[in-house]
Length: 281
Image (cartoon, rainbow, N blue to C red):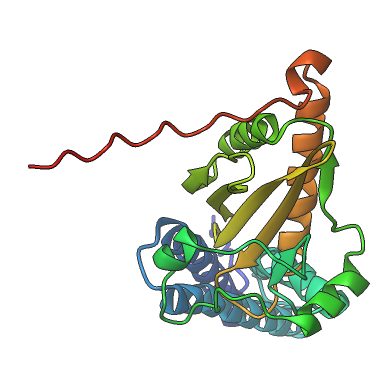
């Protein structure tokens, strides 16, 4: 009895290459994200790695579309590989596409503050911020303030019926809970200085470092909090700084409201211990 030979349909080479390129793009994107978050390279080459992954993802989509056309016309195998490449490519480009839509809708600013007229100053952060390729530490000025007021009218100082010292300590706890790296912290002193906290926050996915400074100033019936959040790199923050300030102030306000009234009523802030007199030799 003669055996029947079963011949398999040839597989589309475009589908094979689409799958390979898509998997390579996925691996490159994961590697680039790790490089950025772990600071294994400078920011420019690290971002170039991520950008390369996105280019590869676009190439995988083009190859997958071409493979589907060939498979439809010539009856070749490989539709599953082409479809998988398409899904991976679109998945990699989905988040950048979302960010692109935000960049189109929001103004191109990278420094947000509740007090544009007298923004909290980056002092210790100015010394630790990388100088090569990073944004200036000085506030951009009136043009940025006008764009901010138009896009984020809700960004304004927070007034609290609590002593500056209580507000400072509560703010310090809230920042620690957020796992921001505190660079410098100075508690408020009566009629001598404002409370001042400088910290480094990181974005959720890529882990970009942004600088945040909080100022606690005494008011007649309590304290006023002003916040400034500034991106270290890039001309557009995609709304990150405004969202960060809003959520921080909401959390601080909720923490103060949760305190017993007796513990948040204004009281004389602690004073620094006097320095011992110098002794002559």
